[in-house]
Image 1 (cartoon, rainbow, N blue to C red):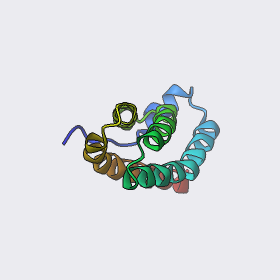
Image 2 (cartoon, rainbow, N blue to C red):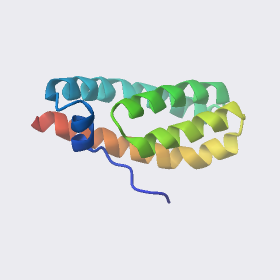
Image 3 (cartoon, one colour):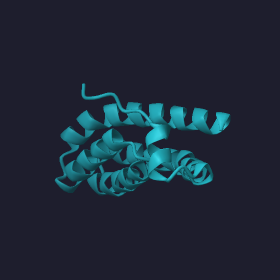
Image 4 (tube, rainbow, N blue to C red):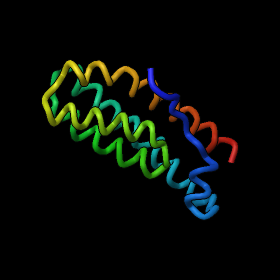
Length: 116
């Protein structure tokens, strides 16, 4: 297994020039939209639809980049590229780790929002 992927609010805060309100807005959008994109990705994986994997993974890659979860962004890129190659075996291999890491990041983001 690769490196541990976590949400780092301090890194994001620094990137946003310490604008806590903007950070909370970005996180709120992430915790609302990422589960929708994950559901679309899950459906595409389950139904062997590489085009759907490309679309969902691309969205999740961008969203993860915005909140500075670089490890998750990289995993989404790998899923997107496997989708472009139509490699469902590779997608299935990558998906489990990505799903687990995204769900952990969502928990961390929700916890941050609840306390800030």
